View 1 (cartoon, one colour):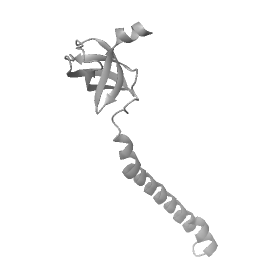
View 2 (tube, helix red, strand yellow; view 1 turned 45 degrees about the vertical axis):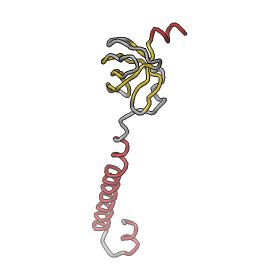
View 3 (cartoon, one colour; view 1 turned 90 degrees about the vertical axis):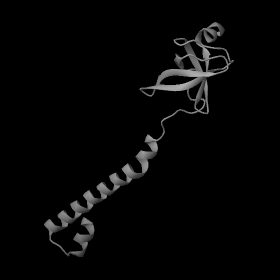
View 4 (spheres, helix red, strand yellow; view 1 turned 180 degrees about the vertical axis):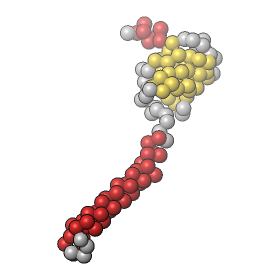
Amino acid sequence: MGYGCWRAEAFGPGATVGIALAAGVAGAAGSAVLVAWWALPGARGDAGHGEHELQGHPAAVTGAIGAGGTGEIAYEADGRSWRVPARSWDGAPIDAGAEVVIERLDGGVAVVERWAEVEARL
């Protein structure tokens, strides 16, 4: 804008600088509004983890997992604490307080295995 005003010789030097500053501020504000409206909500909406993203991640059983049923686990990732439904990978019951390893997420339900079983294989 400043260059265009200067080349057209339509305004004095002070007005040219003022117009260029106003155009720059308006462009920056418009860019910030566009990013806040379009890009940031999409990034904030990703609150979960991918199916295999947590494979091998440690967790603790907070709600007992019944035989062939579901319970609840808690784990920390991305600087936050998460609680999700969970089931045992082999269908065996797991008591609350047990340490487990997440094998995968399956439709929002964590499939877990006891840490002691994983450790025995290592």
